[in-house]
Image (cartoon, rainbow, N blue to C red; front, side):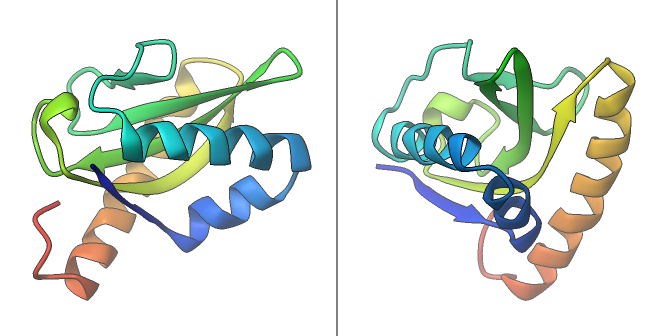
Length: 116
């Protein structure tokens, strides 16, 4: 149903811990197969074009920043997972969003034919 691309940065972040990788693969399956996803997993980041995918492991949240080809995630057919971080406080988002902006420009140049 939904095509999901994964950046190298995202792969590296997920590969660090086996339990994170296992939950990530489960959520990736949900992203690809289900049109509507519960807000405990996917949320729109306010005042940005990005979304977050939340992975809960050992009382910590691993946040994956991504964007998609439609303003409404539920209507999207493509998404690209850009980067991830361990959420410690709200300030972490600003840094991660700046990195995501750089990565989306990089991938837009590489995949100019895709509408992301």
